[in-house]
Length: 99
Image (cartoon, rainbow, N blue to C red; front, side, top):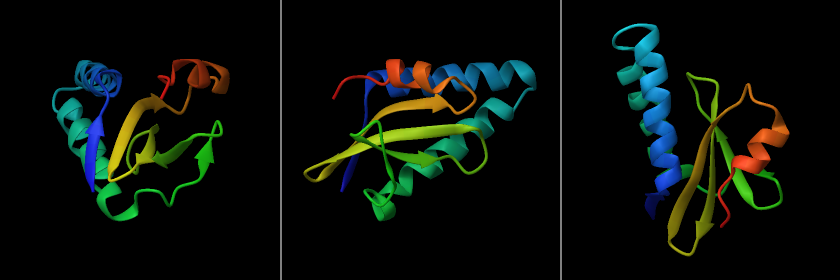
């Protein structure tokens, strides 16, 4: 299966990198490496995660408080959003890009 990130998900990764890098040099790179490893795991585990908001699978990142919201669309796993778990669930729902 192919994994595709929406432009919104790419921007959210960069925003997370920028935030963690501002906290301490090098943590932003660790954030990106960790999240990309989680996203790469979708090659094996794509589609097995619980559904949230009736349409998105949610993979919780292993090392950071973020979740990866995705859908399996044919032979493509489309990542729609990478959002901070500490946010209000209503905010998360509003910030998921429409499929």
